[in-house]
Image 1: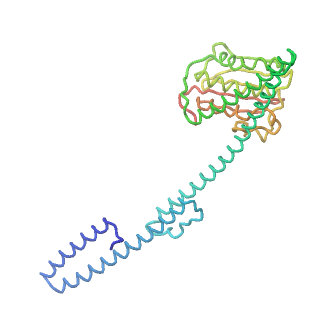
Image 2 (image 1 turned 180 degrees about the vertical axis):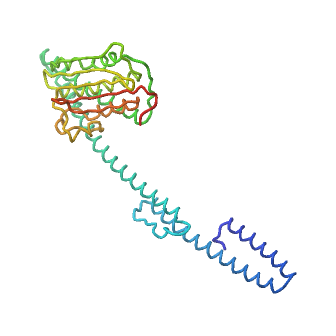
Image 3 (image 1 turned 135 degrees about the vertical axis):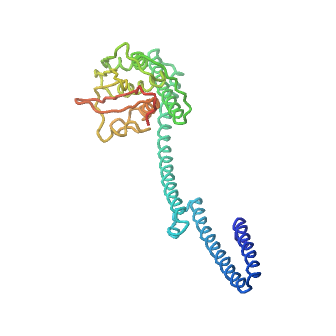
Length: 336
């Protein structure tokens, strides 16, 4: 009886009291009936106790299986509990176990993925940093003014790349953590395009890239100015990097009753078909462009656009180059 919980003891006590009261009544009426009732009551109580103890033992084994799961043992089976009153509970526990295993596998995979890519990012930072230190050592020596100017210019370029990398990583982390409060406002598409282009005007000029812009002055969209500008800047940066000298980049904006779209097309080599679906993956860099970029600019752009009720897609142009389409929907409902 010490293995039976308090609620069961109370239930058994009530039953015994009821049987005792019935026994007294039956004994007054007929002693033989009282004896029969006593035997029947004893059989019922003993049977119930046996059933309760078996149920408790079975539940205890089920708890042991759950405990194995909590201790990371994957070879756990609920076959024993597929029938009976614990079948529903064991079925749900089985589903939970499968879900936990899948999540654990995904977490391990993501952890390894992040480890490898953070090592890559660390290498990407270490390389320009080492170069900067070498340049600083050169600047301390006796060199001509022309060499000094070239070294300072190279160092400025390297530090700018490092700054962009760190700021982009920080922005992605903020978006992932939900620590960003978007400030929606009505902004002109031309203002967004001009602001995104401004930091890239020098690289565009150095590569002699012809720039075409097509957007009505009264075309507007409702978005967070800072993040939508940074998203477009990262798209343009990618296009500039992969457009050859004397190439072209076309930027256009249009709208309909559903969304406002900004399209960026370049005349680069385009994107291999097998890589199109992975362009916006974090830290992913195409095989043909392994020496360019860090694989986070487009990932940030996608994240920033989606958070503003928009979509970002890419396709290859019919002739050559890539075409990015950024849509900001006019509905106030957030897209999934």
